[in-house]
Length: 451
Image (cartoon, rainbow, N blue to C red; front, side, top):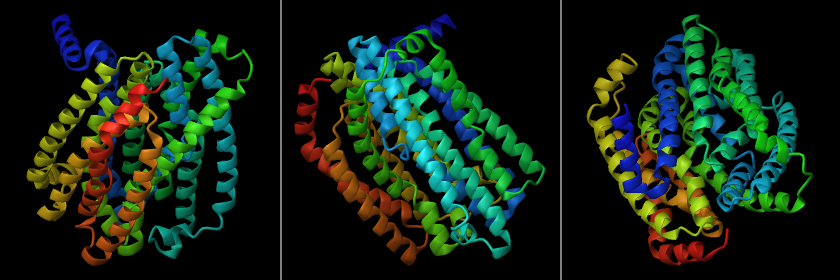
């Protein structure tokens, strides 16, 4: 065991320099959490599909996918807080870390209260069953399922802050251990309820609300740590609150553009083609989503470590790591995409116990998108850490508008087949190509800035 650990750490240092061990430690637990999340994606699907049937399963998949909106409904303040925590930690300013956390928490609590009031108003007014493509007799169940998702999103806004702060402090492993436990608990509960033939509302609530228990536990542990508990009593810092709001709002627009681009697939397909096609698309999407989930074990801890390195002036390490991470991401994504495309039908037989009948063109589109997304995410991780926001905002808004229009056109003319191709082509033209042209200037600006 010691020999294996030694060689892992040696490999991490060779590729990622002196910070490789920290990335490896956080990445190992991130991998465990991602594996648990992947188990949720794979293992739960056949159970829920059997319990609900194709029509309600499509609605369930659509509702569960909406939880991703919790990532941007904090208006970017979570990411802004993480960046400020990482920069303060990199400079050794311990009191500033606690002040940033307090201001970030208070800001997110206010946002959560406003969102909760909005949900209370919207729930009885919106025809949820029509949006999900379900019959009138399921109006009540649809509204209850939607309520579970919306209130989960409201609660997740402040509770997700603890994970970002732990990452900013270089303690990502602690946060990922809680995520791992939450995902396993969710999987067990969803399977148990599916075997009991529970309703759409109950299965939706189990899938989206159970992971919050892990977030709550992580939050309690963070606030009980001595350095945070002591520093939290030093009074308000309006200057830090302004910095969180400024950087956070930029992240919010960026996250909103990403949500419109990447999370709109299932709602669009449900509205234009019906829940059955949305369910078929969701199954393939979940298979290929294993690739970004796996690579996320690198990007998540690497973001705050980039910020710490920039604050410490270690620019050579940042440049080397960025180059190597992009190459590594492209190779991993290409290899996984080829395996999923070639072995798709055997995987479906083992997974959902029936052929799905997806064509090669459809699968190849997801494969190409996996590679394109992997390279773009590697670059975006550095840009986010370096607060290269204006460029990202301009590119993201152009991409979101163009991508949404391209997807609607693709669905109307070709069905679900060309949706991943539309995403990959538009992303390459509007995000990757401009990065090649503007990259040198952006890197010089990032390395000359004081953090």
